[in-house]
Each structure stands twice: as C-alpha cells, then as structure tokens.
Length: 270
Image 1 (cartoon, rainbow, N blue to C red):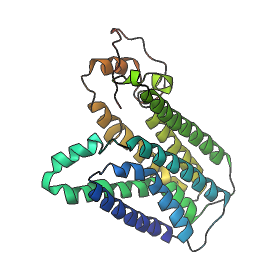
Image 2 (cartoon, helix red, strand yellow):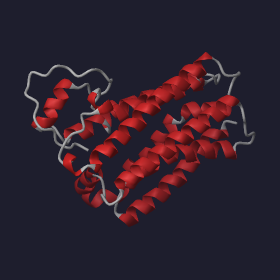
Image 3 (cartoon, helix red, strand yellow):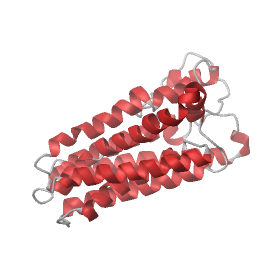
Image 4 (cartoon, rainbow, N blue to C red):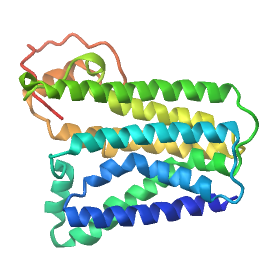
C-alpha cells in the first residue's frame, strides 16, 4: 500500500507537466492557480483508484469527499474570477524578473514546486489511504467541524468579494463588509483552518501524526510566503489600505479596533 505515495507523486508530475505546457502556450502561468484545488483531487482520488486494495473505510470516503468538495469549489471560483483578466500580477512580475531564464524557472519554481506542495499538503489523506485505522471517533468529528468552519469562511468570503466587485460603484474600493470586516484575509484563514480539520481526521490513521506537515505547510505559505505578504506588498503605503490595516486583523477574525486615523474612502485591493 505504500505505493500510494508514489502513485500520487506520479499523477502530480504528469498533471503539472500538462499545466506547464498549457501555461506556456497561453503565456499565462497564473492558470496554475485554477488548477491548484483540482490538483488535490487528482492526487488523492487518483492514488485511491490506482491503489491495489481500494478501501471504502468511512474515514477514507469522508476525506475524499471533503477534498473533492473543496477542490472543485476553489477551482471553479478562481477560474470564473480569472476570465478576461490575463496573467496575475505576481506571475507577470516573475516573467519580467526572470527574463531569459523564464522557461526553466517557471517549470521548476511554479509548476514542480506547486506539485511538491500539493503532495506534502495531501499527506493526511494519503496516510489514510495507506491505512485508514479504526472506526470514526471524536477526532474525526472535531476535524469535520473545523473543516466546515474553514470551508464556510473561505467560500463565503470569496462570494462576498465577488458580489462586492460586481457593483460599478465599488470600483476602486476595498471590501470591508461581512467577513472582511473581521479579517483582512478571511479566505486565507478559512483555508488554514480547514486543513487543520483534514489533519485531525487523518489522525485516525496509525501514522496520522506525520500529516502534521500539511497544516504547518499551509500556514507557513499563507502567513509568510505567497499569501498575505505578497498581496499586502501591492498595497503598502496606500493610505486607504493602511487605515483598514490599522483597525483589522490580518488573519484571525476579530472585531475591528478603534482607529485613531480618520477613515478615508477605501480603494480596491483585489
């Protein structure tokens, strides 16, 4: 059953090579963002289907269903958001900075690195595919509740942002309503929380503790690398954004602080 890990890795390799070719032809490496959620479905469901002894243990099926639900929603959301926008500003900057090395650096640093991240983050699910353990227990319930909370924050905040941007009157403004009033990045908070839920469900596997690398990786990326830092750098020094930043938590949802600065008209940040 340990070939589950190599099956998932092989699937991701083929998946990312295909995405690299598509991104190369389209001159749009940000298409990888659309493929990110479905990549987990490909890896986890593919490894399950290719496994020598396909398990229908309740824990296995629960995780596969949750991963499928999350991956499909995220891929659809990012895909619809991407229509007509062209390459995302982060990838355009890579294209400018990398110059003649763009071909191989994009292959390694965007696609292959993304595949490695997906494989690492999928570990709780892969460990359950290898050995699902005993019947469902309290950690599975707690994990499911955390996943539900995280999925709610991610899906609802994404939808609130979509609705906000649909109104022409909001052009050039920052969303500070709904869940965005409690956190500058409620969608990132939701993603981090749901992966802690996946990890707790995965603890039912005898080797489930090794799945801890999954939520730790997600939290590190969102908080320190490609999540909050890259997005907020774009708006650093903007007085409207700085006022929003002064009164609103970056990650954990909480009530806004009373700002000492006058609140200026907000400007769009996403």
